[in-house]
Image 1 (tube, rainbow, N blue to C red):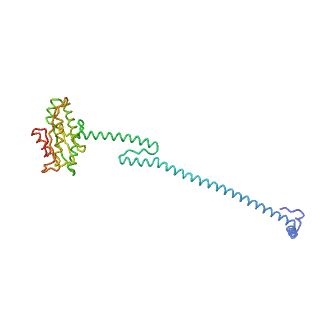
Image 2: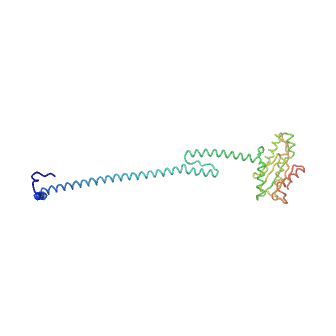
Image 3: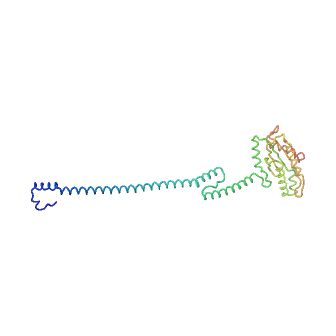
Length: 295
């Protein structure tokens, strides 16, 4: 700092003595005390303000942290809810649909509206296809005109029973003089005769027995759970059918049946049950027709 001109003329010792007097007098001490108190007050105020600002910052940070925690919790709850809804409305139905496809069943109508509509459409198509397949199978297994089982079905069934343990009887049937009747009355009448024979055979035998048309006027019946000691029941049924066929009406002339029967438990079996039944049938045809012969 700059000194007054008169103080500049003082010696070094005099300047030191004057400086000592200045820092040791009461005025200087009072001013120094005042300055120290003011500085201390300023520091206290600064500290207080700093402390207040820190508290406000902490409060703001705490509020923000709490809000962030709440937001995260809400987000987690929303995500869990979405997962539960998606699983219930989409994932679970798709799992059931896949199971239904694997098991060949219709879909359960569950889940979201779109999936329910899809399931209903699939079920409709499934049922239509099932009905179509049933009709195709029936056409493949049955004779179109008489609705009796066809030759292919007969061979499958006979093979199954030949290799099984269930006792059965094989009944081979020919319509007597069918060719003559067919030529005399026409094929339409001949078809009606075949239909009538089929209907009477189905009526006479049980629903568990298999009535088959294996040729033009040739029929076969696989009678299940049948043993040779019960052959009288077959004889009785064939007699009743022949009695009805022997009654002539306006549209259908009288006809009769020749029948040969072989049992799975027969004595002295030949090459196979079909040939044995055919031998019995041939015997009836060579001996007056209109009857039943057992091998």
